[in-house]
Length: 151
Image (cartoon, rainbow, N blue to C red; front, side, top):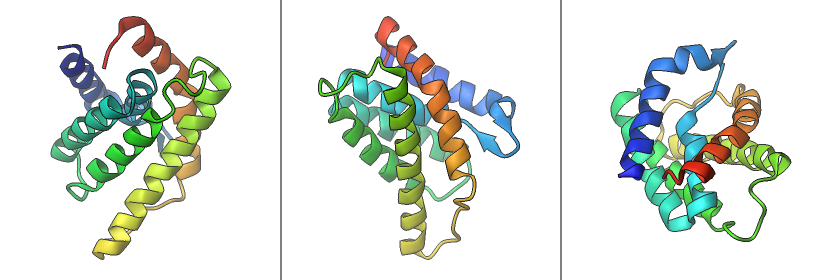
C-alpha cells in the first residue's frame, strides 16, 4: 500500500508541479530521485520494481519513446540497490554525488537506447545542471523515505 501511495504521490507531484520545479531548462525528476532512494533503503529488488513502475507511469503520461525510461530506470534502481548496507546513505555529500552520477548514468542510457533504435537524440546539454539539481534535493527525499518507510 505504501508503495502505491508513494508512487502515486510522486507521479502527481511530477505531473502537476513540474513547471514549478524547472528553472532555465533545468528540472528535477522526482521519480528518478525516489527510485534511487527506495533502492538505497530497501535494496536492489525493490529499487528495480519501483523504477519499473515509476518509469511506466511516466511513459504513459509524458512524451518520449515508450520503454526507454523503463529500461534505464530498472537498471538504475538495481545498481543503486546493490549499495544497500555497503555505504552510509544518510551522508548528504554521498547523496549529492550518488544522485548526480545516477542522473548522468540514466541520461547516457537513454541517449544510447535512442541511438541504437535510430530515434532522435535527447540533448545532453542540460544533463549536468539537471543532475546537480537532483543531487541537491536527494537528501530531503532520503529523509522522507527513511522516516516514513515509504516505497
